[in-house]
Image (tube, rainbow, N blue to C red; front, top):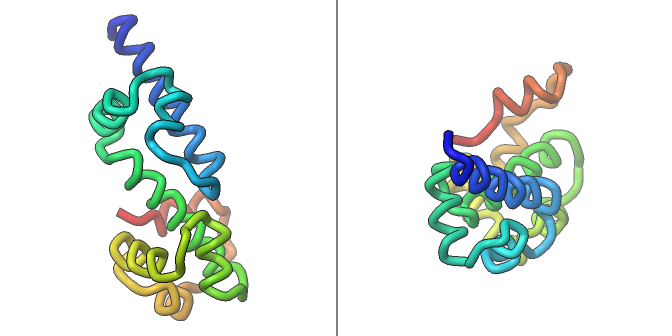
Length: 129
């Protein structure tokens, strides 16, 4: 791997780590591009080439993964969970959740059972495609 490729990968990982850590904050491509020290257009192209999905879709999936955990482990309302994980409206949350998971948040909560296994296994088993 060349030095240039290695540097690019590190910048993309830095931006992805920011999304993983601050998923509930409003993050947009220009802000993430600043973290990676590249232009917004270059960031969007390079992120997709590196990770196989757009930055927006990655952030949505990360938020839905956290919402899945909260739906399984808490009795909080779907609306509260939607706002906590960073969605601006319950409708957008429900539509995105259904597109990624394949069922509505309420339907997922009914079907999901909190398992007494380590979290790392639960995350691997329930990770949306």
